[in-house]
Image 1 (cartoon, helix red, strand yellow):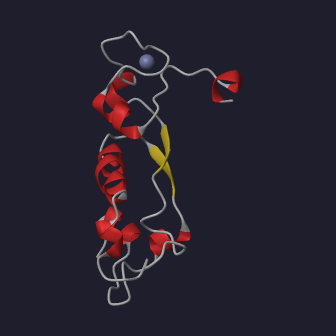
Image 2 (cartoon, rainbow, N blue to C red):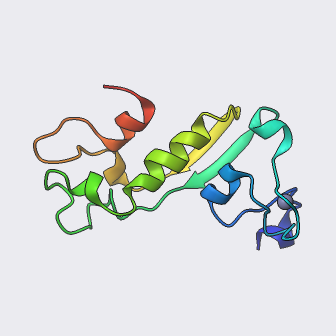
Image 3 (cartoon, protein in one colour):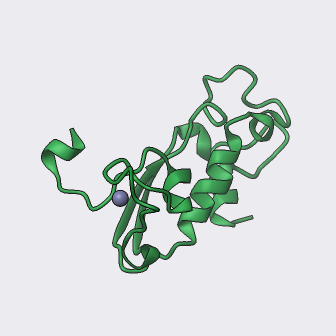
Length: 119
Ligand SMILES: [Zn+2]
């Protein structure tokens, strides 16, 4: 749908592939693909990360340690955090409402505040 309606310079299957500069789906034989200026000349990065670590629908979501021990937690706090350092002018980041809820029943910090570096 994306390619039928828009032109793209590069299109990666996931954030890790893009951050590593690997060949994208449009240039599978290339040594690698890099967006213009490595990101500094670009305006917008639209991304989402896996919701299950943060979703209030996940069993035990507010149990101490449950969010950080979820096997998909690292995707947000490694790949998305790295993407935010690339210098794009703006980002659209999609997550579930539970992303802005405390880590657990004994915490005040939320994943959202941690990602922003707020305390
Ligand atoms: Zn490419």
